[in-house]
Length: 257
Image 1 (cartoon, helix red, strand yellow):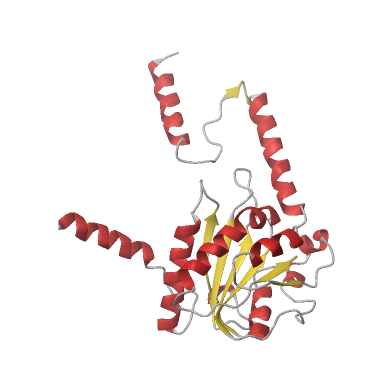
Image 2 (cartoon, one colour):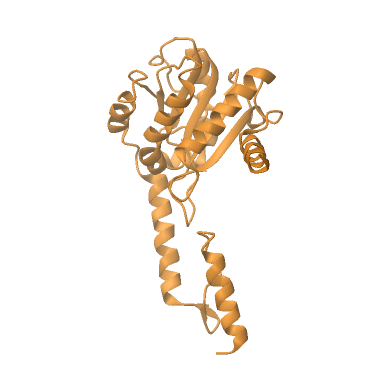
């Protein structure tokens, strides 16, 4: 092995410490090693399972109620099967029936949606919601959560209109990848209503501790966005997350002091 080979191996080894992506894979001739091919196939199967596994609604409802925000309502979209959910995103944005959602106006409403990874919602949804409630509950009124199945983000707009929430926070399972299958996203919409577009929302993604964003950090960013939305009168492309900037500035001032 030449000095150049050693240097290349060291380079890739150090780079792999900073990412879960498959980089710098060795080869046997013109092909990947069998172990890497098998690992890729296994990860693909796990990602498919994360999409197709049904949400454990009853278990999730019990855990959500334990947070203390009230018993969650359960709604579903107009999708009739998981296969249709993947083929018809439009139906996942429309409610089948909102009769279970109480009309109780609140500053903030929460929707826990299975999205493309029910696995992510089952693993991280309750602790994330708990952290959000802790962070936002002192300054805002919080509605009882709603669990939505076969749901896309925009289904939350219909739920918010029914419940009459000023600001909507949708916690939803993100599309699984070959490295991460249990990542959650938060979509925040101020003054939500049916017909809102992605340009009207703010997204906090990659929530899956310990490797992704922590519950506390996600809640901190969400609280900052809620505050900013109230000042601006809207969410979306005009609203920027300044929580990290403030932290950097505070750290810099402390260092100078």
